[in-house]
Amino acid sequence: MSEPRVFLLPDLGEGLTEAELVAWHVSVGDTIVVDQPIAEVETAKSAVEVPSPYAGIVSELHGKPGETLDVGRPLITVRAADDAAPDAAAETYREEEKAGSGNVLIGYGTPGGHGVARRTRAPKSSVAVVEPVETKPAEPTEDDLSLLRTRVPGRLGAVISPLVRRMAREHGVDLGGLQGSGDSGLIMRRDVEAAISTPAVEPVETKPVETTPVETEPVETKTADPRTGLAVSARTPVRGVRKAVAANMTRSRSEIPEATVWVDVDATALMELREGLKANGGEVPGLLAFIARFVTAGLKKYPELNTRIETAEDGSQEIVSFDGINLGFAAQTERGLVVPSVRGAEKLSARELDAEIRRLTQVARDGKATPSELGSGTFTLNNYGVFGVDGSAAIINHPEVGILGVGRIIDKPWVVNGELAVRKVTELTLTFDHRVCDGGTAGGFLRFVADAIENPTSLLADI
Image 1 (tube, rainbow, N blue to C red):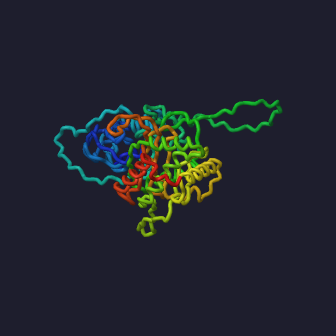
Image 2: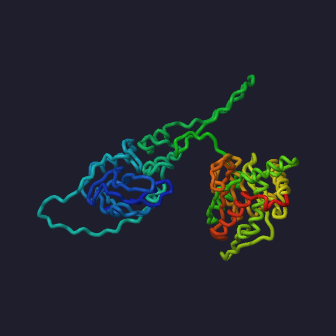
Image 3: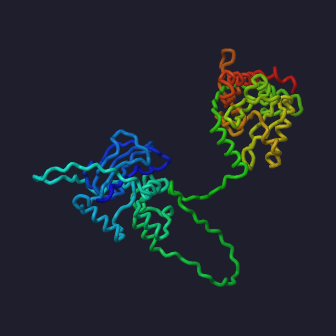
């Protein structure tokens, strides 16, 4: 008597680790064939029928409808059909397996099976009923575990059976490079046989023929993406500035419990102030410089947002405060987004801030900014209004604890002294690290900057 085979719930793809058992399509005692749907399971993505990789008689069902099963746990136990009366379908499968026939559909996720469950019942007779002997299911073999881990990327439950994998392995066929001809892209035995029968073309060494050089356009061979089925038009390595930005943003999102607050602000008075300065002649600071001046004043009033959290080797954390403000600002360059910082920004007037912002922007776009100019900020100001957008929940520039975003300034209806008027309105958005302060501090800082924009003259005596 052969040992029973235990089929584990296969990898269903897309990073899913569990599935709910919706219904069984077979019962204990049923005779099943390879690729016959045995159960319906539902994941967070979709519902799918799970076929059996084994032929034989169902001896145990591991789970009840409504239960959640983990990937890799037993789903069904099947004993060989020759332990009872031989089954024609099972015999056919064994013969095909020996002969290498292409008639068997291989793979999990086959829509609709060809096998019909048949219940094996003992014939009526006077023979005494023999009580079944409890047998312990065999431990999953390495082949079972390999089967569990092998699937076609992007195909829900499209898992290659041991027969096809063995055939491909023996003939050096890469299953990952095959496009299955079965339903839902399943790789069938005929696909592997076709790959085996396709001869590899060996390069033939020939002497170059001297000809007049002719300019030809390079031919680009596009490969299909296995997940989407679309041709891959390009692959761009993530490196340089983009790699550094990606790493920093990923670390920020993974480490910082951030929160966001925002407010609409009437910037009419600030716009009128700039127009008045222009009328008097001379160089007038840009809007970003004025707002930077308000931000440095706000950070002196709410220093919790001008800090950094450091984690020691033992896991303990400290909030590090600074005697000064290095104000970073986001600058878009041909090499990507960089954040140069104005050192000692709290000591500078609006005009001095404007001059330093312009200088740093230019050196950053020229690719000549020093590491200290790009990596010494304690708080970041981001003017995404230049891109024509109103708001954004920005990602904090790690290891800082806050970033203030400024949207575009546009005409909007606004109530002034009880009367409806058209005003110059912008939106301020503050994203902050909730570990260093609560909403009261964040809201207080945001309101301080907003009030300064709406009543700028009180803070700009030193421009």
